[in-house]
Length: 258
Image (tube, rainbow, N blue to C red; front, top):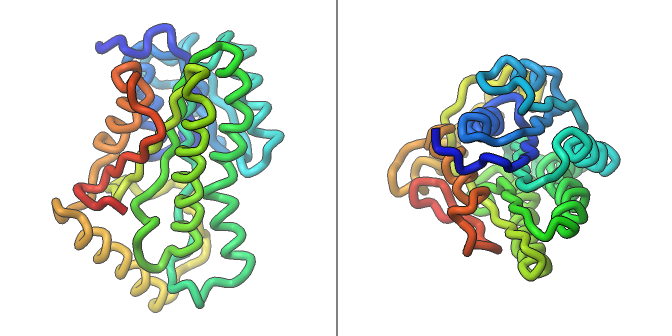
């Protein structure tokens, strides 16, 4: 075991599935204590992970709401006494289509899903880290800031990139680093709870295929990445190995810079 997160306390959002779950697993494997947060009750299944006993807190929360973000940070500190790492992993495309086909409520929903949880969690965590005089925040953005058929999602993730840079400026002298990863296409098991419960039409399937084709084409490696490759970048930025890195959005897209 690489004990690089020993004596560290982390909050990981969007933790029930995919990249977030693997980040939780790796943090536990490497000695950390973790609050794993998701809107789905599936997050409580993580309590069965090796090393979870006494070192894992599972919480359900709707992080599109500021009050829930504040509750999560307070419960983490109440349980573990401090907060060293925040991984903001909530977000993801809900619809995939050319911008003119989005309806008003869909645009608002995309921005709420992929920007506001990161805003609220940073806002709730920073006072804790500022009082400690230390902390590391890693926001999960996307290379979709330059891509097709996901304009509202791309705009939200562009906001995450700007938030990352601005918070790094404000907090570098307070011992807090703020970085982001920008994942490219990532192979993952089918989501147990889909972001969009509507059955796609044939046209919508074709629009989504355009995203897949563009993602592979934009990658120099001409492939999707793995969950492990995404988690590795997140954990590097979260760790003391990246102690002299802040304000950076690191593309993890096989050469696609977003």
